[in-house]
Image 1 (spheres, one colour):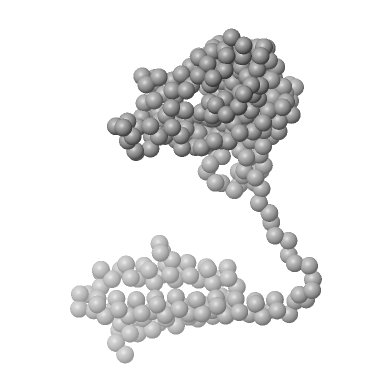
Image 2 (tube, rainbow, N blue to C red):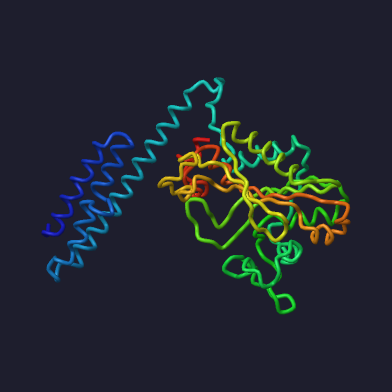
Length: 348
């Protein structure tokens, strides 16, 4: 027997003897890591050392080691198959008339749970639910809500456009908000109107603790005779009390949105610093987290829908569902929702 054959035969005998002593899947896995592990398995290291072998014996030694590797892998798989077959035979002796083992059930994603709770809160106030397309025409997404061609929101770095030209222009996009569906509702409905529009939206923006490129919104719209700003504030206060409880603080401050006048933002005190605003990355040291924009529907939009703006007024709002979920459960980073980490998702 040559020196190469003797070396490989010794390795084979030692490896197979160790595998024979490996009782149970954990022991077999430990054997696999010791002998066949990709990083520091004994056979793996021996194969890597071939470069240091004498040139005249390198080819024969390499062939023998690779054949040994195939043999060990096949023997390991055969023992695993034998163990599985034995386990199945043992199970066959069980009483099949006994109740089956309970299967664990999945659950709704925390964003879906929050969406359902928000819809329920507005439904109690008489709002109907209307859904629309996520791939939208620029007319509905921008023109009909008073966002002109030169508005920054139309820039390709903010909007995800579909790569299709119609009459030489981009006209199809992934909607940046759910406001287009408010226009669709008004086109199809005579006042009074009271609807909410839930759905996903898409924006090309940098992600951080409170921003994601995909977000979930609920837009709300109410149009009727005599609708006032006080009706808007009352509706949003009732929503906030329903979702967050009586102890959370709420603030409104003026903001600009093209489709409302006047416009406001509503914010809730930060769940971490509770409006303290000291070294808090979640609220950026402001003490507040903005969750929605709102305001009185602009008369021009009322007119564009075919309504008489001298007779009808309305309010609109848009709620970020992920931010509502963060506030409800004290989640510090919005990116946790879509990382598919079961350790996080199982908490809800």
